[in-house]
Length: 280
Image (cartoon, rainbow, N blue to C red; front, side):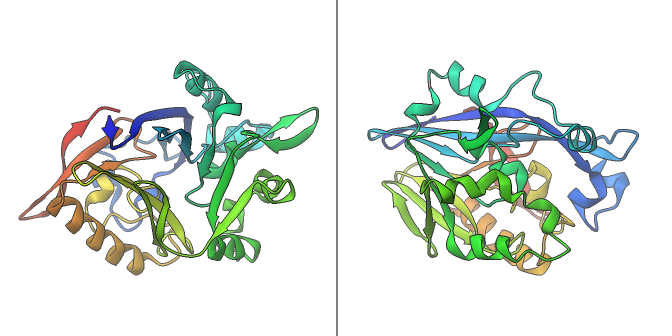
């Protein structure tokens, strides 16, 4: 897919699993399980899908997946699976080496989004992309540092602290254009100051939804994750985003849907629905 100067490609970094009830909040299991079957532990499969943008002299990555698993217990609980794909091998298939990546936009610092930002080298965690600038919202960095008991388990500071220690991390303040044709939209429902890249050339627009619309089924307004800190804020953010997506014919990129990478969205009498799928 081409947007302005950029070639946009989906990058599969592996799969994992989370509790289905937590993924769909107040939605009853008989409804969500039609689309996302659960295993014997009530877990549903999630993709950990990054976005690669190449053009205008830059190689840009949005999110990094779970990264390498160093904890057998965590691997088992979350069913972390890199047998079919992982971040670096998927980039290699696109002809991209870690040294060639110039920019890494982290939507937020939860382990399934920022885990691949660093990797172990000689027993030490170092930035996976040594020549890249990493970007996250300052308000989110501060919120992660003082996470509450409710969301503390989502942040593994050892995964991202080396970015700050090695001066590869740039803290941003609010919405705006970060690179040519790439604007960041900030969201506060899922977590404080999550940033969703909106890539547009005036004709084609792609929104990397991160956790505001993680699965295709989350385009339905009441389908909101139990993980969200402020579900009613998520509801209003989705309402605003989806209205624009229909009016301006955006493509939505689903980071976690195991089957659908990206699609347009339509509005019908019963609400929003996924429309034509888009291949990246």
